[in-house]
Image (cartoon, rainbow, N blue to C red):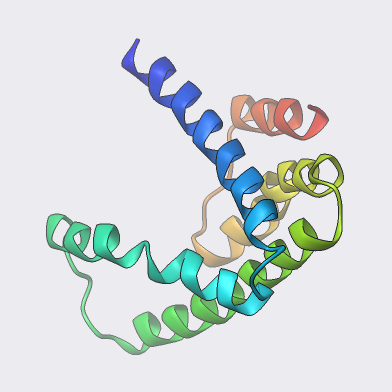
Length: 128
């Protein structure tokens, strides 16, 4: 039952993040908001690194870090720009298409393929 409570809390706080982001973007620049969104997560995320095994500094690691970092920079800026320039009711529902993009990238990057149940779940998420 704890998973249900955590899921509801996550949905609630994600919606608050979007609303507060929209309000704060009236006063600050999109680039500052994108930077601060990632930067202020560091105090939580850096200690979490101690809890997981580290894969090492292989060339694959550096390549994945570079690609992931560049994609996250682009996504953060575009996300903040969309929130600033449009209504939340128009911008936020587009996030539900994320699982469709994962259907393309996960097999290529990780070699992961969803099950039929997983595909059904993705269909439910995307359809709303």
